[in-house]
Length: 303
Image (cartoon, rainbow, N blue to C red):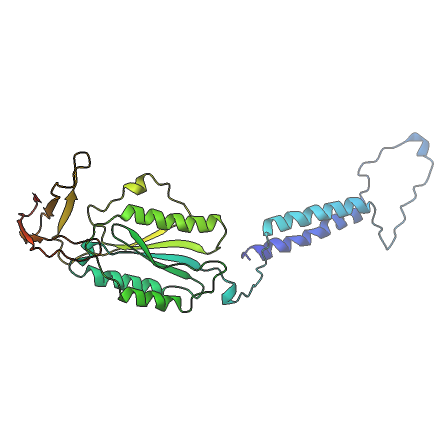
């Protein structure tokens, strides 16, 4: 309640004013002489010890108006103490979206990412649900959210910790846009379909490298009820090199050699690199690596 509430409630004492007004008998102030009363002796009014209230309805209306006016200014608010158990509190649905592309192999980026993930897990409440999604060229759900009608997973945070220990950066490129769109769509659909009253949230852990594909975000209307918390990791040494596969979809044939553009960062201290093919299942090709010399700030195309 406000500090001024007692003062305004004291104004309820003004309810006595209508009662006093009804008890006051107003006598005529002026005297008008009449010649016909010249020879009559005046008789004083009778005085009674008890005064009588008249016009009860009018008295009650005036008192009610004053009471409403005092309560309107006081605006009393009585806080009801509601004791809720932890099981009754609505939690959050936290999706940890972890970047596992090749750029996360640089310097100490991967240990930083794991530290951010561990900090997010520690901040979870007792009723929060958590999911773990990794992405490079494609998004992959490692630990999913709880589903209605399915038995709950015991000790979900420790399950996420165990899965994090078995993960590592790949050698693939980064498609940040499609990963965020897929996770946001799933969280937004759960809210619209009333599958969960928990508040959705995305925790993005990435290095935000230049070249991450974000085109899907430009054509996507982001749901307002899905916030994103970004934990950007930074390398102690900012020099970097990347490889980009070049394809000519219009004139490409099976016999055409694949071309790779090797790009070296402007602040890089290395100029000699080696290119080697890797299959879709992660196996390295048996042939030897191809050496490529790329000065800092330049790029080279090799076949």
